[in-house]
Image 1 (cartoon, rainbow over the protein chains, first blue to last red):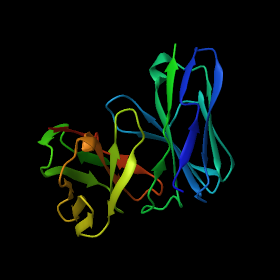
Image 2: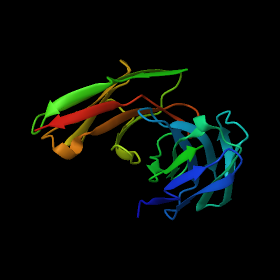
Image 3: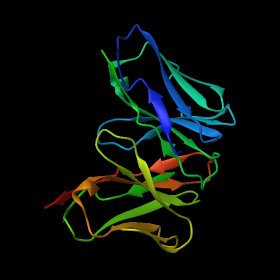
Image 4: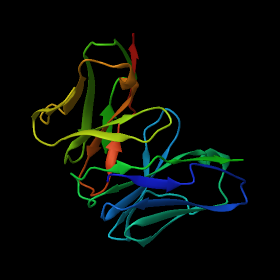
Length: 114
Length: 110
């Protein structure tokens, strides 16, 4: 099973709302990632968790708050977002955060901020 | 820093062969990935090269030359479903961080 699941598939929120994106994998992977992807652009790395600890934060604004409750779950908490934050948010996982480890992507959450 | 270049768009005919090139200049190198991404969907893994040479996997092959900072993805016997964006990604020395190229949008025509 090489499946990474994400919920919700679509999310529309106002700038004052608080919402969360969820990601789950059951492949026993110990590294999980959040990416942001705008139309016709490549994925941009936001956060990396390795063994449930935050290992990379790519200078992401604090209105995005990641959380890794356990090795299978990854959340992204959203608060006071801006319209320019509208994008496809992709979760990925890999066996470890090693350089040669393939990342498996979830289907993404398409976020629209009004 | 990392700099990865791919052609923006390519068009090819069903049944033909197409080669998508990727050149990179990176501060460290620990392998190169190719991903396929259909519109509105997540990227899916195609190949990984860390040593020089050609890796063949069915209709898809990927080549790497580390000394030239160059890779290509070769797609044979093109099918309409191969119309997608193809992303080249380089794994550097920062564990967990792959840098993606802007992607090549391939259109396969009948």
